[in-house]
Amino acid sequence: MKNVAFVPVRSGSTRLQLKALSKVQNETLLSIALKKAIKSNLFDEVVCFGDKKEFKDIAIKNGVQYFDRTPLNATSSAKSDEVVLEAIEKTDSKNIFWINITHPFTKISTLQKAFHILNSNNGKFDSVFTSHSWSAHASFSETLDQPLNYKLDNSFSQTQFMKKIVLLTYGIMAWETKSFLSRYEILGAGMLNGKPQTINVSRLESIWIKYQDDLDMVNKILSNKSIWDFV
Image (cartoon, rainbow, N blue to C red; front, side, top):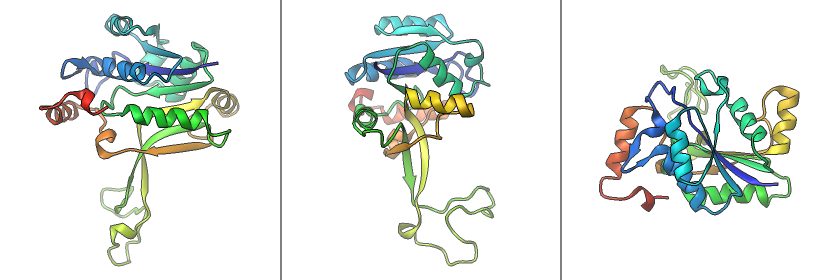
């Protein structure tokens, strides 16, 4: 049984077209994610799932096995649970780790923490997610009339005494395969309904490339440094 890292990509990204081929310095977002997984020396296997020849070429260049995604999982309507399920069905894993291309500042040390949680916790946790915690006023609405962690009629809270809001960042997500499959078989979902642990990461590591402006910001941050100085 193996620890398997998988990197899913698709050609139909709409907010930033062909996002996986977008460049951070001289590297594509896809190649950065693959190289981090390889450099970590943690995984028995690193695989890429995609739907385009260019993705396959990058995977092969980096010595990574490539699988074509099913047509449904290559669309914008694909459900994340089904993406994980496909990765499980096409690999032989004890634990499966999703490494997201959209987070170029994810650190190898964070991968190590996720790996350690699933391999050294004696069943206490069966899933891992990167997150970022905020101590700030949070609301479900832009008009601030649906507060999460404060009361409208109270005086303005000091942020250092507020209850933290934990936001998933999605840079790394991982599951014990057996428990994921058990939940999925019963409920049709297996990602968040197990025994999760989070890894709190920095604001830098939380940067999520969704739009061109995000990509431009990352390249500005790296104007005088290499991406590999950060991972």
